Amino acid sequence: GENGSLLLEPSRAQLIQFSEYFGASSWSEYAFGGASLTKTFGYTSPEGVDNAYKFNVVIGTGGVLFTHNFTATASVDHTLSVWMKGEVGGEKVQIDFKNTSSSGITGSLLTLTNEWKRYDLTFTNDTGTSRGFQFRMQQSSGLSDQTIYVWAAQAEPNASYVSSYIPNHGESGGVTRAADSCSVTGASDVIGQTEGVIFVEFDKKTGTGERRFFLQIGSGSTTIYARLESNNSLTTQVLNGGTDYLTSTGTIIPSGNNKFAIGYANNDAVIYLNGTQLASSSSVVVPALSSLYVGSNSSNAQTIGGEINQATLFNERLSNAELATLT
Figure 1 (cartoon, rainbow, N blue to C red):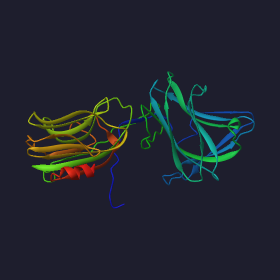
Figure 2 (cartoon, helix red, strand yellow; figure 1 turned 90 degrees about the vertical axis):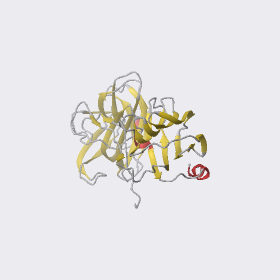
Figure 3 (spheres, rainbow, N blue to C red; figure 1 turned 120 degrees about the horizontal axis):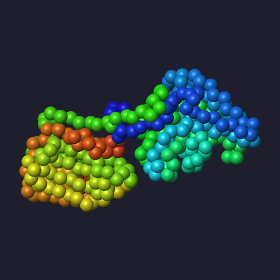
Figure 4 (cartoon, helix red, strand yellow; figure 1 turned 90 degrees about the horizontal axis):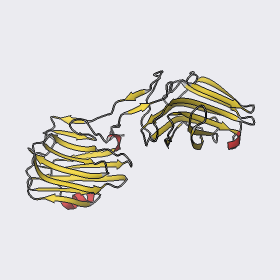
């Protein structure tokens, strides 16, 4: 629409060797009880290219397992995703986190529509390291013969939610996408140098266990920043040449959507989270601010990535009532 958006995502790996080519030898097929699977290539995928597959499934009295093995990390989250649709709608496919020996974790039975949709499931792996993306289509699940279309399977390790599709056209060890970052330097003309507000709306994911910056203005010891600690608490600080003028620590950030703002002016700084004032200071010397980092910090480390929904910069210090309403 009129207002653009920027998708910033953390580094992720794609473990499926041939993520679009379901005819590759890395995919294994098992049919039993008179079942069969016929795969036909060349149907229009969600990206508008004729690179999707049609699966004609004969269930018989047994069923079909269609599996791609990979090396998994024990005891961590893995997220599987794939685009699918049915010939008429109502078709069913079960996605499991199992290898070709059917060792692993049972997933969910999905009901398809006749429109393309990306389906994703997150599994907390057991102690096994050989796991896979498995399509399970069985008579015991109440399935009958059906025709479905599939495109672009993805398996992401150390991932509690799905990210953008990462094509892999044959790398056996997987493909890794670098973390995205966003920064504006030389921005002193739009950052309030004597007063201002930075507002950030973000979704906090659970169970991250690491420090993540979602905001920094300036750099080094001359900065205003806000970050989530490994225990999911908030730390915010205003530093000018290493002198600490305002610090807020210890507030636990709730899961889900959060709104944060820091208003600053000489001898007048305040921090708000979700409508509540966390800290204030009447002895602040505003540092010289020349850069803005959203979802990261000046060293591009400890990024919070795609969890940022909105960031707004004001070059005036809003009132406390306005900050409470804004957040």
